[in-house]
Image 1: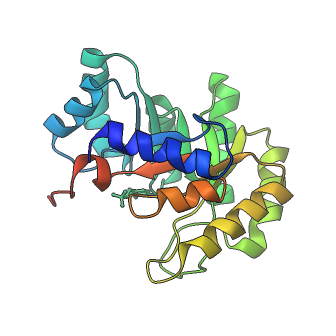
Image 2: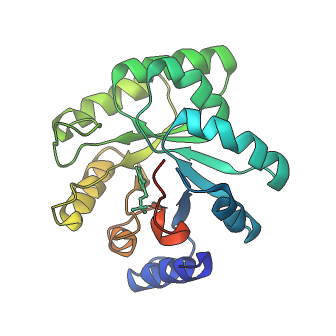
Length: 217
Ligand SMILES: *Cc1c(COP(=O)(O)O)cnc(C)c1O
């Protein structure tokens, strides 16, 4: 689907939900896509991209930005604290803050450099053992801990379990964000971004619907 079609569907979903057009940020998820597909989307003028891995992003985005100009880069995948410095140099926004050790790494780096990416806390709303994210019951304490470190927290992120109704998870994430005074809601992917917008998503992460199926390897 073209970028223009996705954008039109986002605008329609905003209107349907009684929201102002333009209140949802589209993150084009370019992980493992061939470079020419990414360049095509850059040529259409899009400048907000998401990646899953620091290493992969570090291999392509400095060059792409040299050619096409600065982009807003969002890290969506799990992050080891020993890669926090590299992540911070590359990404403007991190969606996968999920534990105190990583929060402390960012707090130290922020002290040292005077800068820090915007941070979303990933919440494991489905309480899936294999999935990253803070458990819902631990969220409020973790938010308070991050605020105690003066971190720039902007919102919450979730990836609903594939076999469950996503709406329940979007509603839960919105409720937890409101309770904690957080405005950002990073939720919704290719299959459910319109639904996520109806539950208040401020950032949708859309990969395959824009770029086509990911080519493995
Ligand atoms: C890959 C990925 C996406 C995009 O998934 P699509 O189904 O291709 O839109 C969104 N969020 C995260 C965290 C991802 O890893």
